[in-house]
Image (cartoon, rainbow, N blue to C red; front, side, top):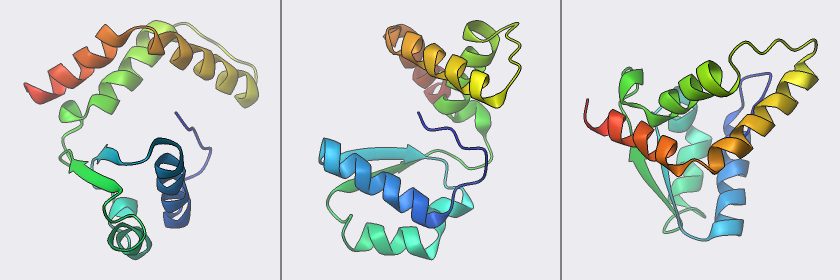
Amino acid sequence: MQVHEHAISSRECVRFLKHLVQHLGKVLVVWEGAPIHRSKVVKEYLQGDGKGWVHLGQFPAYAPEMNPEEGIWRYLKHVELSNMCCATVHALRYELRCATRRLRHKPDIIRGCFRLALFL
């Protein structure tokens, strides 16, 4: 999971896709089709160097209840990080990293977020 204090650019999005391909090979990326995902820079990468390596699935852009990522964030906020009060952004980042590491060991929660999104 990557967390940024600012909105990421199209070039950063492409850099991340290249990173995934470099480390994983062929990947299926599922996203909601936000404007950054439809940018010219991203489209050019997907039709050029990413062709055959990055396959896309898309969730509806304006239906957060159908996006498993929203379920993951909800779980992190309301379970792993509930009642958490951090004095600095750095401390919050650390706690978020710890929470996502714990979540990796709970595949049933992750699968549940996908199931919930798929059956709504």
